[in-house]
Image 1 (cartoon, rainbow, N blue to C red):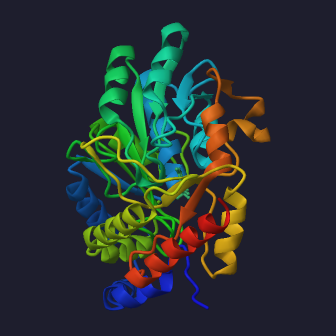
Image 2: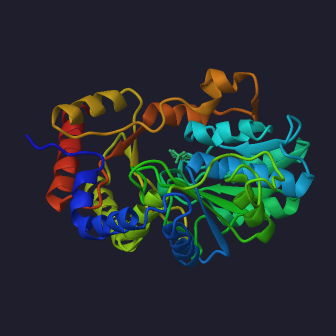
Length: 384
Ligand SMILES: Cc1ncc(COP(=O)(O)O)c(C=O)c1O
């Protein structure tokens, strides 16, 4: 029986082996493991790719979010941390890290519901909340699965209410909104190099992008214990540097990034065409011509009573799938005591029951993509 993985990292490594092995060998030769030359090289390469002003290599996507928030607390309030009265709007339909980062910065996460078409935070609901809310300082939109949020609407709201915008771009490296790369539009962008991401390393890593020189300067201190150098310490910092080895690997993979995103888009096209019109199955929608999805995940919605059955059926046929996310953040015990909720979060709750991410491996053969679609069709023909 065929075995189709969500993501075949071994195949990717084989494809890029020469470049990656050469990059690792270079590190072994120079032995500059901390702030080695590959860090600045990667920062420059990504800065140019995003058409941003600054990029800073950091230890993970989570830390890119926390560092963005800490730098903003220092820059805008002259405080090391935000406090509970400071409210930051985000989506509950995201990875835990988004909400955790807000809590770790000292602020209160405010969960606002999502749009069922894009799975992303609903700008209309942000506006509704803002008409009566006080002390809101920022928004963290998450470009979930690689699907861009409507950045015109979000930046418009931010300008009207004087809010910062941190783009959680952990899942959306290479995606675009209106010709701008995601992560280059807000006050900062937070990227993850977690291995399963579009631009993944061989371990944890991340990057923070910004056009603000002061944020750049503060973050560069915060990643090394808060100082310009070891003993000239200005802030309560972290050890949140990107490793040289991860930078070298990610840099080698940057050569393939556009090709790999195009491959993802081609696979999505096959899914879109071949799965269209099945009752009980909704496909990801591209809501605007401004929007260029980068398909970190290809996520469908399945009628609630059939989702788990479909997953089981696909699994029995050798096809792996994932549920991102089975539990929205406002249902997690850790947020119970600290969050604020804006109205009903029923769309997020419904999505957590309905979403299913299909295999999306850039090197997946076309016949394998068709095997997935045929198997899905077989399931629906048996379960009408
Ligand atoms: C939406 C989102 N935000 C933040 C993160 C955190 O990134 P990392 O795992 O690199 O800390 C992830 C990834 O895991 C994510 O998917």
